[in-house]
Image (cartoon, rainbow, N blue to C red; front, side):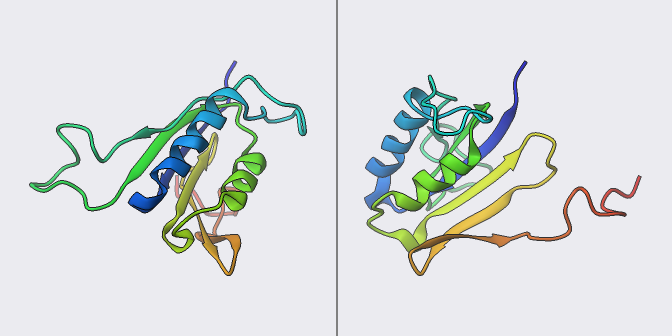
Length: 134
């Protein structure tokens, strides 16, 4: 049985090593959900999407760096804590997008004032009446 979270992170070129370190942590050490404080055997990793041929749609290569992964049983609180505590060279550029299993849209997290904060969307959520029209 799996529990998948779709994760994307965008960061400045100067922070490529930080994202690679985050990916290594996810792959080797990240704790599994439901086991707080316990070190895990890893939950997956992140791949750089914006340097792959043929690239994204359109006629140009993207002018951003985006890494993504489908993480299995990831403790998302631990992931957010790790992102918040990383010594980013360009913290205002970092964007973390997370869509947990059984969620229907990504949640956007950004570092502002030294804190990782959720920016959009906060509402409506999948539990709200009328969220799904069918």
